[in-house]
Length: 274
Image (cartoon, rainbow, N blue to C red; front, side, top):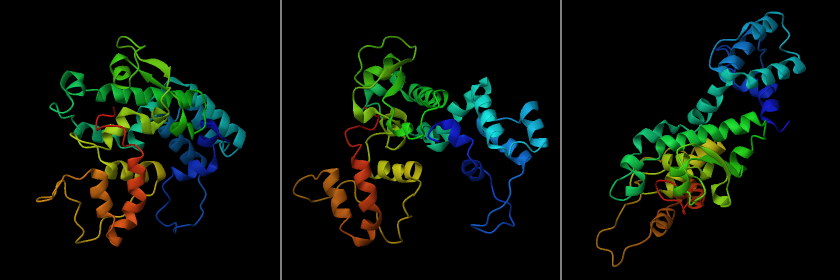
């Protein structure tokens, strides 16, 4: 099934969010009892314990029925308690807590620092965007491809949108395809940057770890990060040129050969996602 409801009620997904018992070997299959299933499902969707209806079905051993499980997922997604899914899921998935550490440099980004700091609004945009995917039972792939977002005037101006006024968030359809999906959202772009400049390496590593699910290996001992600047060179070189030289080392190329092209795909966005 392509919709979020189908994914959340699939046995594969529900086993994936369950921590295997300590006596289970890697790759070994094991049974997930209904009470455990109800608990995992409730904490994932509601961030709290199962309600009476879900608990009663679990005690009677009925959650193993595919139709019963799907109907419960549908019911739970419509419940106001499911609001925590939108507010928590993407935040933890993409480790957006790191935004607290990326305070925009006021001398470089005066329009997005101090009183104009957009980080709080960016997080609200992510929450509303995720909620729309869940509420509309859209394909999980639309986290990466959806053409809409939610902006107030502050974010709209940063995104080059002039039709939104005021602090209230409004749904808009994005004409710029580079803004579609999560990788076009300011929160994600800022989380994978430094406070004073962007970084193709950081953004490439971010995509590998949080989107692809295949984080790059830790750099081997003795391999230094590429220099921010080189002393005594005849002319300054671009970040692209410096990184290209770094990749000439076969040991570095193993990761950077995959990571760097992903990061350069987002090179049009600066450190504050503009």
